[in-house]
Image (cartoon, rainbow, N blue to C red):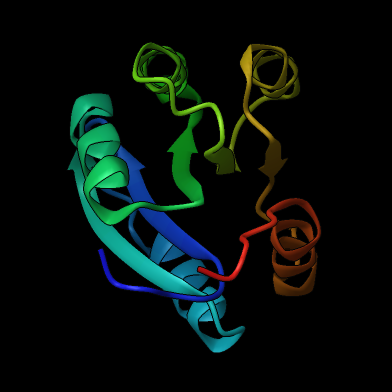
Length: 135
């Protein structure tokens, strides 16, 4: 594998959710902050996301989601655990009800960013919590 520095983030929309605007905006914002971004787009399954995360050697998986995708996010977390990928941070953004957000965090989601979240808060969270050693 090639050497790289910095944080690498995979951004995707999970399941049958076709709302891509938030994921596209966050992808651009992360690139502007100097992160390497792999954007998978819409209609991704948990399996597709995990395979891409492995192939791309990412530090973070960012999922754009709505409340209806709760089960698929839980499946994604399970697949990461099954593949011993505990070092990948999973963050979610979108319209996720408070109770589901709390449950997702209990199951392993690092952070949830609701629609009113600022770009600064997302970038600062990733930079503060993801330590990528220079390779």
